[in-house]
Image (cartoon, rainbow, N blue to C red; front, side):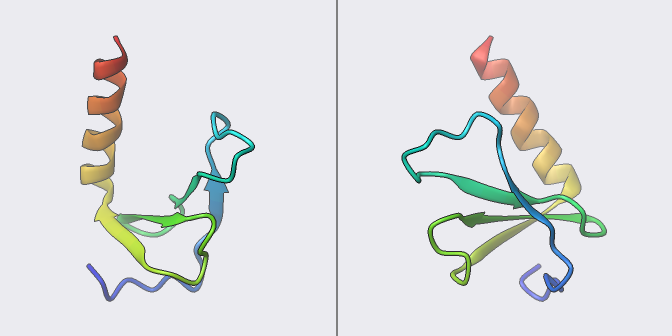
Length: 66
């Protein structure tokens, strides 16, 4: 998955992100994958997962919140 083309990634932060700078940015506009990066280091490493893996992650977080 590390060979994903991120040149067209449109990055956005969660509306729940605080003002303290500890945020992640997510690009969901890429075909079949979701990319995640640290907003403080936009040129740093990027975690790339399949769209299915991302949906599972978000679902797990949602169910944990109750």
